[in-house]
Image (cartoon, rainbow, N blue to C red):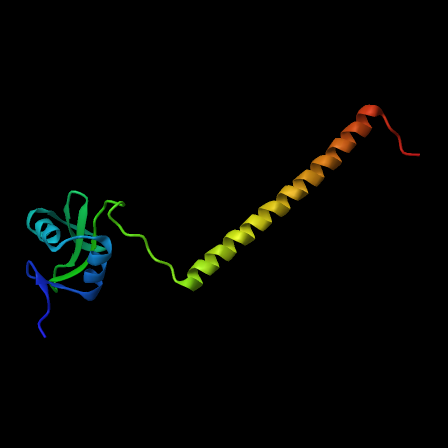
Length: 126
């Protein structure tokens, strides 16, 4: 079984998955490698062409990942059922907490209003 290559770089499974997930075509990656600027950062090397960034391992000639840079082109992540339930539970807990805080504030405001009335009216305790 031969490994898939693009412009002399081996395509990793991670790269292929991100490429498909983010809707980036091989010709766009090839153009970035041919015409883009090679940049070295602390995270590694990448070719940049416009908003497209192709991260590579120069020494092993491997394509690591690809970022289109355009959020519209990025597909949305699909959550698992458990992740979705956990997020819903967190939202509901947050809403309950906010409701309790609001009720405490309202109760406190009512007590403050009463105290203000007592002081203004000069009511004394017997």
